Amino acid sequence: MQQRSYTRASTDKYREARQKEKPVHKRKKKQHEDDQVERLEELGQQHQTIKFYRDINKLRNDFKQRLTICKSKNGDIITETDILNRRKDHFHELLSSTEQNKGSPIMQDNKNTNEEGSALTIEEVEMAIQKLKNYKAPGTENIPAKLFKCGGN
Image (cartoon, rainbow, N blue to C red; front, side):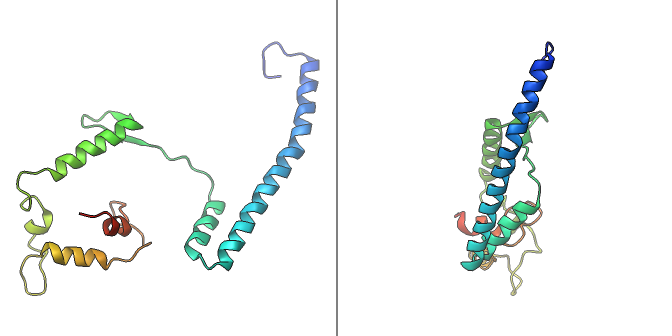
């Protein structure tokens, strides 16, 4: 029917196929919803609240496709595998300074002092990171606390 040279017969054939498809589609959609509700009930009974609420939010929100784009150094938009290479280069630049501690904002900033007034040590920062709570909203850079805790040095 969607072709340029369609006839009445092809239109009727298309409509019949649609009439057969609709009940099948409705049945499959209903089965999918029932499966999701059963999964939510299981999670609720098993007291897995994080997974339970995450799945409820997935059901309530419409599907939104995530865009995987990034800008290169010269401002061009890049996608897919180029993003990984760009991030690799970016973090390599950040982490490969010739002066290890002088490039660190922890050692430079006078506001970052401990209770005695001296500069914070790496051990104090590591201890503070370990005290962070998991599953809390990430900060302005969208890096969750769990990544800091489990990411290693």
